[in-house]
Amino acid sequence: MIVPVFAATLLNPSASQTVSFTAALWCIKNLAYFHLMAQYQYHTEATIEYIQNHLEEFHCDKNVLS
Image (cartoon, rainbow, N blue to C red):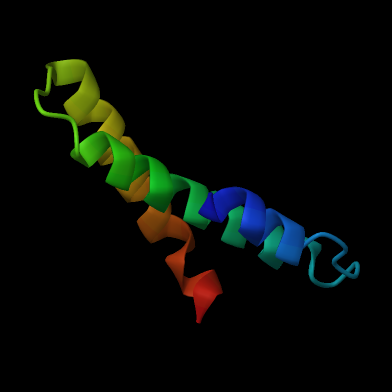
């Protein structure tokens, strides 16, 4: 639910805000996906790789939230 709420909040960015808003959306999306996948009861190599990728992508864009 947080991704659509965040997207609605950042709906109409100005030209100077577009890059930052897009990065913020990707950051929140990756954090949400990481959290959801981390709750799986069992993990395979594939799910562990997905979790690692989402966490890495989150860390690439997290500075946009400050």
